[in-house]
Image (cartoon, rainbow, N blue to C red; front, top):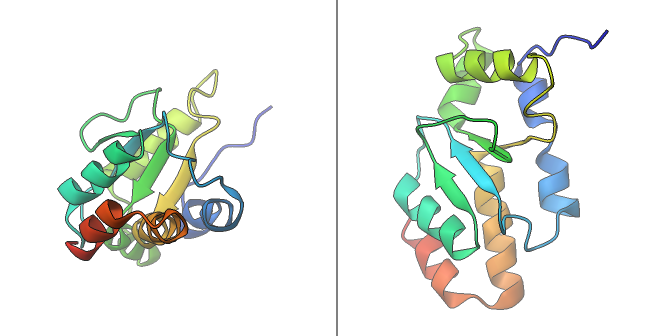
Length: 136
């Protein structure tokens, strides 16, 4: 029997090292990325950056095609004080459903996404992405 997944801060932070240290620099190519609410940075610019990297980003539909779930700092902080956002409840339900529709989902935070994109832009001397990052 599969162990039930409980979403807490530790669970949400488990994939940070993979993205920052192990993921290839083209990791987001072909991925579907879901953003929670509460971002401190301009989400439309982040969507543009990910689009330029070959990803499709949205903040309205958490369906079974999502590969990457990006959680805002505000939701992460709220979780630390015992308040679980509705989107995290939805994610927890999906992760625990039969057939594990999101079994390969990677969960990252807002700063981890920005750090990854910054590292990639620096490596490739990608001025367009760097200008978008500066506009955040």
